[in-house]
Image (tube, rainbow, N blue to C red; front, side):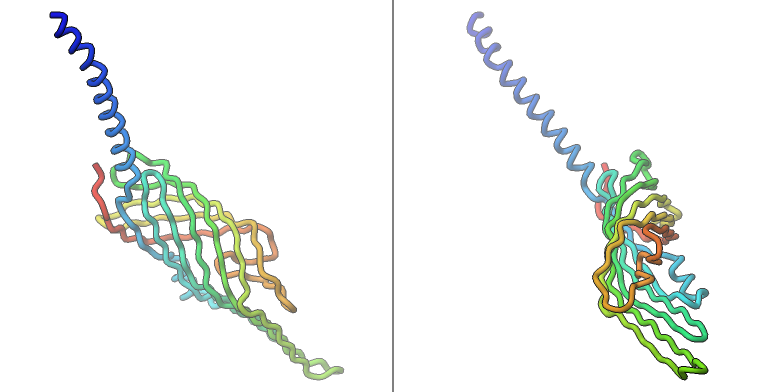
Length: 225
């Protein structure tokens, strides 16, 4: 009898340790499954496409992508942007590419459809060139032609974002993103101060707003438990 009691006292700590180890392993597996990406979305900004067709001073496009990791979305945007403003005596134009990268936090964590209401941050970077041409016909000084050019100007900024993404049908999603842009910085230029930065907008104010209406296609890459 005493022998059995001794064996029991020896086995109880071992069983408790094994049970604790299994619990820790289950928790680790749960955490890993939560933070395992389940899908990638690819899309485009419909507003940029519409502005290119109907706004004479703008040409551009933008593509978007994100991947979900639990309640977080790693987001990436890439686009092209061009402006052209003309008067009787002057013409301004610029063209360039830009990208944004950042993270969104989803507040609809228990939605099985993976719909999202999010708040996030972005880092934006742009590289562009611009021209400003002035032609004046003065009755005293005669014809005056001046041209100012900036090439390979680099700019960066930060954004606070918010918006929604909703499943419409099977793999088709739609949503919008509102952007508050700030902390703009630019490389030095010689004669012309940039007035418009691709991806950011006008530079006469320290902050500005942006808005995208997006169409997405979602590709599942793993099943959720």
